[in-house]
Amino acid sequence: MSVVRITRASLVGLALGGVWLLAGALSATSQLTPLALAQTLRTSGEPGAIAIDAARARAYVSDSRENTLYVFDLNSGQPVAYVPTGRQPGQVALVGAKAYVSNFTDRTLTVIDTVTDLPTKTLAIGGLGIAANAQAHRLYVAGGVRLWILDTATDTLAATIEAPAGASIWGLAVDTASGRVFATDAAQPRVLVFDAAGTLAGSVALDAPARLAITVGSADRVFVASYTDASPKLTTIDGATRLVTSRVATSAFASSLAVHPTSGLVYVASDAQRSITAVDAASRGAIASADTKARTGGVAISPLSGDPIAATSGGAAPPARPFAPVLPVVRP
Image 1 (cartoon, helix red, strand yellow):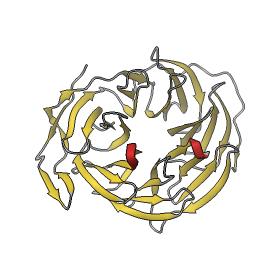
Image 2: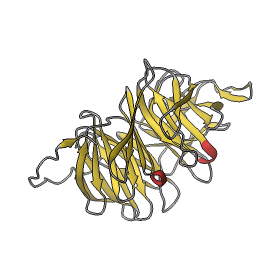
Image 3: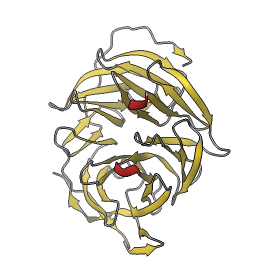
């Protein structure tokens, strides 16, 4: 169990208009309670997002330097497959027996058969955040100036939505109960709210623009971390009313969030601080942290132990691949 040394500088609770605000940001000088990680899933280059298949005890972790999706057995913590993707894979989502990987440089989406651990097609959409509503057979795909809605039963487009003028859609999260989709706007400090069909319903102001650190917890609560080192905040939004219910200090340049299903704690991954921080988003702010001592990608909750899992660098490189034809890029 490791310790990260961070401080909550000038953490002052202010009740303003029913919203609990904690002023200040986390830096690297004071000590928080050590946080135990269930596992550290190590890739060899630049680890990205984690997607969990609880039924099969599998974790899927992208590596943007290796252009590979690592498949981990959670029982052993070891990789069992290495799947080629496009260039600079980032976000990962699972729907049924398929994994979808968003490739930043190529602006494409790799579709992978999780039974065979082989890529099956490359779609000419994406590059940024993705979020799945498996029950509705929908995958929401961000591409900056537009949002695509993919029918995952057929891998064809259900809709293409243009972003509002001046917006840059990056991170996505979906509430499967209501169908609402929440998107960060990297160009402005706000979250855009869409209905399931992609109609813009409104927006919610943030302290600073966010990128990929956005997720939905229970009771339609949305958590989003601003991507800045100037007093970054973790904001909690009531998805139904689009009102901010809390705002607390968090790690700089947060890249990934995971919400514990019972405690409600939000785990924040920061590559800039090489840390995973547990945050009480309702009141206390940061309460514990683990120093990963390596490049830090995504964070998730282990279906085996219920504790947080981190993706970090320091693992073995993928084995040399035999020659295989490159999958053509097709329009969905």
